Image (cartoon, rainbow, N blue to C red; front, side, top):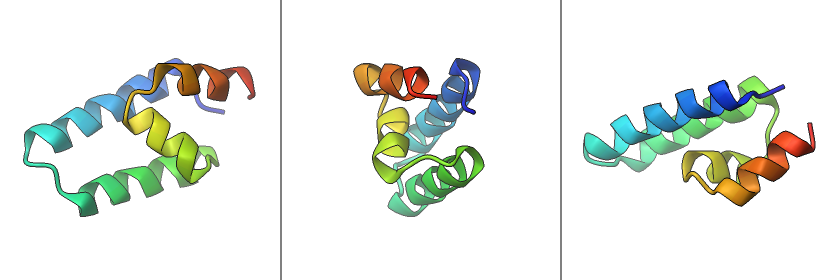
Length: 63
């Protein structure tokens, strides 16, 4: 089960990737890690990494 603190951690890591010259391979690796660790779908993972608030609230609500 993912928590808001987990989401914040992954969003911070995503910010680092963006600041270091966004590389698709790093985005995909972070997404896979998040997906596997918390059993999320690809759209859920993308919503978290792209900070889509409404979708994140739905993810948290549905757990």
